[in-house]
Image 1 (cartoon, helix red, strand yellow):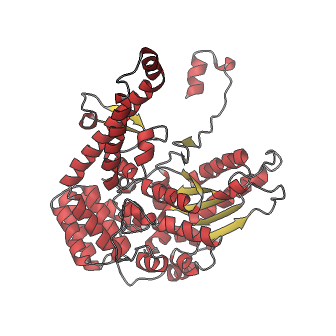
Image 2 (tube, helix red, strand yellow; image 1 turned 60 degrees about the horizontal axis):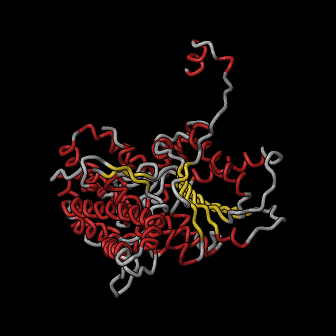
Image 3 (tube, one colour; image 1 turned 90 degrees about the vertical axis):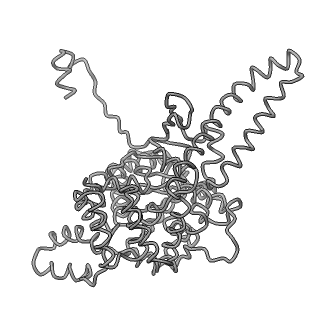
Length: 494
């Protein structure tokens, strides 16, 4: 289209064309997004592999800038395919890229369908809540009049350059108000220093400190407004009761009460996405809904929100997010039957289509194996968190983050055979053999985590905490930042 316009204007011959390979968008010091929200639906629902090449090219760009990766771990079919395609690119361009000393020690590839439970849980760290309530887009958020107390909205960049946000982004929401009030008192003390200054001191204060103080004051005011707005919205939704139900689901208690809670959400028409999220969380934690509950909840949902959602339920079932418990054929049996009827190539394609249908959530077994639910008689102190469970009020350690922690501790998948079996045995590990030039000790501490299908701010906060505890520096590369609402919206057919 561009070429046609240039030809019409008679300047086509005077223009030089070049391609801008826009693969990576740095959102912060440690977060790089590919801004491909469509990746999740395209790959995991439609079976469309077109974006895998884009991700591989993005990794190749990082490889060319920061040298070879010493060790690579991964789990998931998409992770495996992406890694293999990227390795082909490395081999093809071996003579073009100058050898560099490795600056990134390890890389971990993770498919989103390895852990659907975590994104379906309500986020309670500050950055996650801001994303759920205000929708962070490309590292910025629009705060409306309910936050700014003005007649216009204000766009704010949320990254480590914001001194206030930097200190509260990974905090549990219950600690944020206390921090902001302390910050306000400190700012007031700094302002009060002006009293009793002579002319020279006042001149220095105005030229050096006042501008920074005003900027911090403005940001502090916005974050206090955001917190108040979150409190109002979450109080209306009976947030504490909702969290209590979620925690009961994660622990496997009071399933009947939780099912009743989902029914109440549907019948009160609180929100179609919120009701769907709770149904998916119930399904994921219970290895599918029993037939009676599945049919009842589906009927109530369709009657409450409209029958055009029938296709949405088909999508959720296909992707493995909301399934019905039934004694059916296993994937192996399906493959065996198909093998008698069609060619091997066709079996491969049909296997892809059936894999999500046959995929079951084994959350309860994984939870027991990996100790995802902290067992302690003491009350969890959210002010002094002891593990990654703090990102969900001490009730649950994100499965994705726990897998990464365990594999890094072992430096392999050894001892994780049962876990990998429950996750469909798509794990892999490779070691860079051509590291004769050596690598710095710092490189060993840098870990690149590649989320295929999106990651949540809760997972980022949990791994930042782990990095602080273990002395790692995590850098996140994701196809997009996601949360429960974005994931479910991508599967809606309404």
